[in-house]
Image (cartoon, rainbow, N blue to C red; front, top):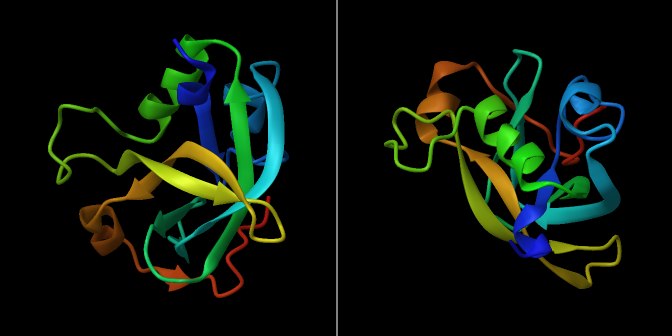
Length: 135
């Protein structure tokens, strides 16, 4: 499997220092690169954020490069995503996104988890205007 398929943009609890970093990423990620994507970041007020991949705002995070496919695919479980399941039943969907460095220069593509509309509607969300979820 190509390594590019094992890159994922993270913006919340999976960032270095985040609550899920030790369990899902520590010792499993070869590289954690600071990056940003276009989107709207929301605090769902349940201990983790969600993003919509729309608009012109920046969402701050990291691109993680996983060394083993099995570790990468554990994120699907954490994010409540099954590829063949309806988006109504998925909490997040895994999609390809362009990611950028701090100067807005494109660095390529990675996966990202976008919350579904159903997830957004379940919570009383607040938009995070600066696009940065605190780790």
